[in-house]
Every structure is written in structure tokens, then in C-alpha cells.
Length: 179
Image 1 (cartoon, rainbow, N blue to C red):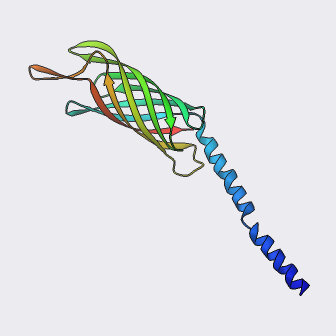
Image 2 (image 1 turned 60 degrees about the vertical axis):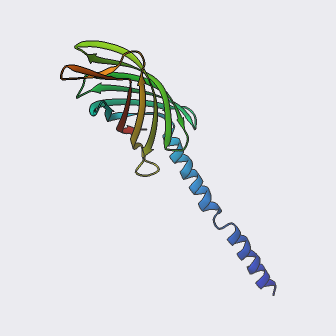
Image 3 (image 1 turned 90 degrees about the vertical axis):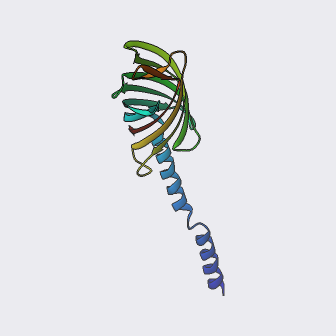
């Protein structure tokens, strides 16, 4: 009878702690995956900006620094391909989940309108997501949607006998970022 009680007690103690070491390993692996996302990230991308019934394509250069669990800063440089609209942006970034974020920022836009080069500031709001192929990957596909408002000067498209102008644009961006 004593052996049966001893075996029953050993079984209960062992089953109570059976997952302890597995959970500890899982927690360590999860922390390693989170640490990869912290710090500096950079990468190239493509963007498409929609305004006045047409798309403008651009090449992007991205850099970001995540200095806390949910705060960071980002820098975007954009060179227009289809239209001569170039931009340099600086934004504060808030991560509301491990891969989703909002940016609120200010940029300087340099563009050609009526055969003159113009400069204007732009304010914008972004929603973005970093999509990693696996948790420990040191790269991700980043997708962003940006809503922006040009302050002062307007962007324009020349049509026959007229130039249409607009202050607001919406754009999408896809980039490959490295951590």
C-alpha cells in the first residue's frame, strides 16, 4: 500500500510539473523573437500614390528605430518615378501590437508644377504592418497605407487647357525591411 501511495504521489507531482520546462523554453523563444523586432530596421520599397484620378509610382528608402515596446521613430525617402514628386518624411511611430503600427509625421515635398519646382510641407497618418515569414526572421514584408495633406501649395495634373489641383493624397507602400 505504501508503494502505491508513493507511486501515486510521484505521478501527481510529475504530472503537475510536466509542462514547466517546455513552457520555460517557449517563453525564452518568444522573448528572442520579440528582441529581433527591437532596434534598427531599414529597407527598400515601392509606393503608389493616388490623386486626381491617376497613380504616381515611387521608389522608397525606409529606416526606423524602435526604442521601446510600443514607440519608435521612422524616416522615409521617396523618389517619384512616373511624376517628379520627391519626399523626405520623419514620423513618430506607435506599435499597438507586435506587428501593427501607426505613424504620425511631417514631410517635405519637392515637386514640379506648371514647369516650376515647388516645395511644400505635408502632414500624414500611416497604418502599417510588418509580416514576418516565421517568428525569428530578421526580415519582413512591410505594407503601409498613408493618408496625407499638403499644406500651402497643391499638387497638380495638367490636362488640356487646365491644371487640376489637390491637397490630399492616399498612397500604399510595400517594402522589404531588415531587422
